[in-house]
Image (cartoon, rainbow, N blue to C red; front, side):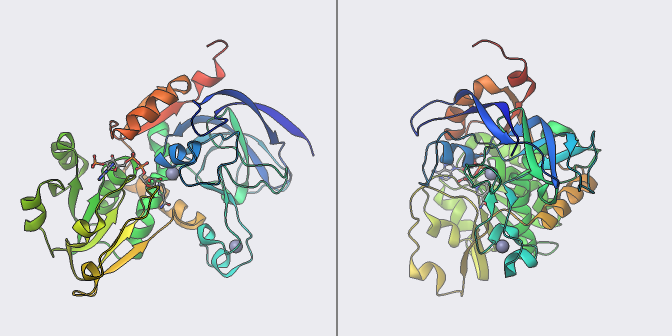
Length: 355
Ligand code: NAP
Ligand code: ZN
Ligand code: ZN
């Protein structure tokens, strides 16, 4: 199999900084497209994985799964894309395509395990997959998304993970007019959750730990905002919400957020902290509450989300960074100090000759 050397940024150990490296990718096979990466969002999952917080990271690791760019090459059998098209890639690059979940368009729940954009296993090269912190990527066209032409391209990149990860559970739990929804943790995921839930027609309550985000959350579309550290504010909203989407990346008391649900309400976790979150039986039993989880979304649903965002003019609020500033960006991400997603301008990697 033909392979290519590609410039990338990655890490070789949990405690190491990310640095420039050369990786090896497969050349396009008949169903693949090659994408010249223009922008890549920085998801908190990139940091969890680079630092092996969930276990199982294979090094070297090149993160990045909010990829947008332009197609530069197509394989012989490719029908959906042509050279010059805009394209996006999210958290998955393949799946078994045969199991019940894959057949239902829920590739993210593939029974054999979906193939992740990074730290997955590339069937073609038999090595780990490498993500979007790089010049280009080669992906099977079935896992490549069309990007709405009316949206700012850099601000569209975060939709590929943060957008779909919030859109999918909001849809699945029927968020819309007449529903009161709580969004917890206003980072990359949470701020997209606010915009999308609002566009779906729900009444949105933001629950944040950051005083600095209280006013700003209203600008994002929140109807109401409360500080989770203020017990009086939390108590005044107890038992009022149909649905809560928890987008928190670190340890937090889940019981406090469950108390906000009405009878038969659900709290869905998309945030993936390193350690278990204890749930008290009596946070769930008395009002028949549910505690659930949700992972990204299938390919068809990701396209639906992008089209929805195109129609509603929804993009991410971003802070553009150079590839070389990624380690500083990770430090700020850990402090919740980003409004609301870092996006890497990949021209900085391509142009960079010396440190
Ligand atoms: P992020 O931008 O860092 O946002 C996380 C937010 O959580 C922070 O901005 C902060 O919001 C809140 N927070 C942080 N520490 C907290 C604490 N100790 N207690 C309460 N709130 C706290 O991260 P992200 O990229 O949105 O990702 C969020 C989580 O989702 C990560 O764990 C990530 O791995 C996971 N994720 C899951 C999926 C999935 O498929 N399920 C997909 C992508 C990402 P406030 O300042 O408003 O409090
Ligand atoms: Zn992500
Ligand atoms: Zn499958």
